[in-house]
Image 1 (cartoon, rainbow, N blue to C red):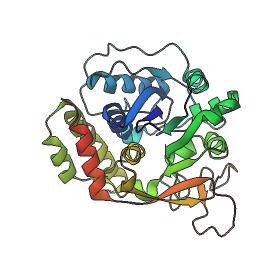
Image 2: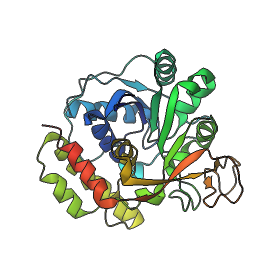
Image 3: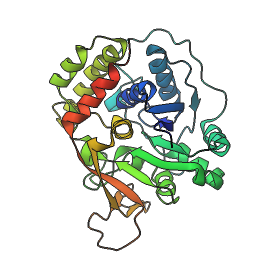
Image 4: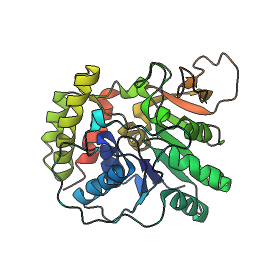
Length: 312
């Protein structure tokens, strides 16, 4: 069994998605096969351009980017422009993009790549789960080719869009429902831990001292992200949500997971989009998810620093 995890990263860049891309593209423990994008933090056109911006900046134009679904499966489209700005990646000054998107649709890419693979592939989602949900519906045979689904999304406590729901899940609850009920192992990195990894000024200064292209981008990204998070939520630093998925794949000891039965509320009521996690296994239902319940914050930043230092 290889020590390298093959992944497809499905994302909606997004400041924290951008950091996740840098970690996944640079780690020797991960083989990033491709990036698929959808609307979420901004429109699909903007999130797709942002993926190209990041890859070009770090010199990884060899990683293909596939544009995916322009909106959710059922509900109306929503974005997080108040957090991520007009471009979805406000802050850094990127040069003109020379990289191009692949012509193939992201859902088609996911289906074809999984079906052609001789070994299971890990699906990592750091945005709404639309592309993966659509791929599973389009070709259910891909499910057995998925090693596991690792997502940033949800919460067993409070949401961040409504009292019940977290952004990535409420953007497309029906897609999340499909993914959580598909039968593959689900590893959920929710707000319960991501709100603990706050990128406070001391962390930004620490990464700034690395002094390479990846750390420079990290610092520029966090200048905008941390400011909007403080203005809207009052956090002393931006919660670096999405990289929790990649950090866990690189160093599983950083995050503690608890097996639970989780359902997605698709009722369209007040709790629409909530991840209902049976923390105490009170209902005695089958376990379908592993939910992050604790994070070693110091180790988290150690891993991020180690990975950013891999760049020149």
